[in-house]
Image (cartoon, rainbow over all chains, first blue to last red):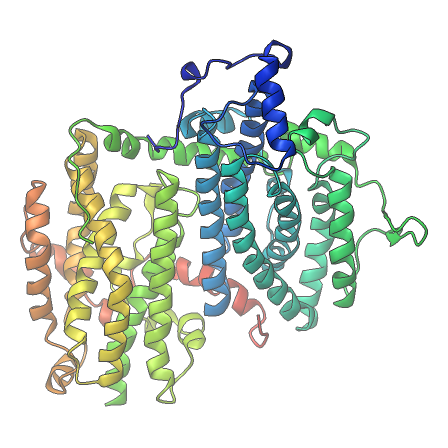
Length: 331
Length: 254
């Protein structure tokens, strides 16, 4: 019903094919195009494995945006003044807008928004672990807007160099908007860091609680993460999890220290010889537990989405109703 | 006259402030993503409009927008009870119908205020109408669309309409010191504005089969007094939430 489904699975001849079953000539041509830096568009031939991986990735990204709107959204009412409130509303609205863009991009690969939402609600498809942690105080919203959005920018800027046209274009626009979220987050953090002792304590407490999920944000270490060389060649995966994590630490640890905050990792430092950050094990066991549904807020987040889905069903049915008369907008 | 002007501007501002907060509660809970975005965007506009009205008072040496919105006791608010009603059960039909009835009222109010002899207000009304045009377009399109769709949608809209109608009627309750405002040429009498509002919405509501007429006086009587500072039972909890952070450290900057 959302209009971006270019082809349905039954209209895609190689739907479900394994890579070794694909037409070798077409595959070679496809890989040559990517090697030349061309973008793949929805109507182009692509191996099913490429399609499958991209659907999985874009869909997870879209789910993360709508679930991510929940912990911050609950702070709009409590935002302490007009300036912060209006900025936070704009930010959360942007995040839902990103979900809309991303679902549209994923739909062009042959999976409908309804099917993606169903897979989110059944737990079949994942979203970023970080949104399974609670935003307990106002300072949490500041840390999220600054550091979680900073992580997202690193991840998304990397992916925006990818090969699938609709995803790349969506990411370029998303990064543009995220850069404003980061400015808003940093400004809020600075006010708390330079504020009253109570505000400072609130900020430090938020950083203490969010540090581990932020370290998890880029995914498991490369030693535990399976990424085939093929996904790199197809420009689906453009940097490893550890590379992105290192980039984040490089950019943000000095800024955090500059504000006089303490990062809750006593061994965190940059090794002068390797130029790489050394950090404590952020408890990858916890990461796997949360991804498998045992985080502090998994049940609550999905319950909210299930409620919204069930509660709004009559509206979607009404929109699809054959009796519905087209109403001409007035402008 | 400053006190009279404050009554007028607070009534306008408080309506927008509180409804903006209610709209924002739809983030993450809309029936389709596009409606989460629309309600967030409209709510953001409304809160911005409230800030602009308060600023007209600040310009005259009265409190700042933040003080008006987040440091004022409940009984000094002047919003209509329509905007205070909570999003019970997140019924989209109620949210939509409230949005429709309210934004129709905004159209009428702001069109009239463009002619206000209080020039800062006339200029502001002109500016706000540019955004309000899209609120009205959104509300009207959805009401007409759902009103002609399934039986369930029709019945839900109708029950929302019956619930909200007396509250919407009282958006035009006479303001304290209204005679002086009318005398000064700041705005037409609210009774006059209500007639214009009825002219605007009656054909649309009649088009989907809803009857339009004045609510019974025994229904209206217990709901009156909002413009005088009488708050509905829903207001206290909302205000407590709105001020939770700012009140936790009153002297701090955020």
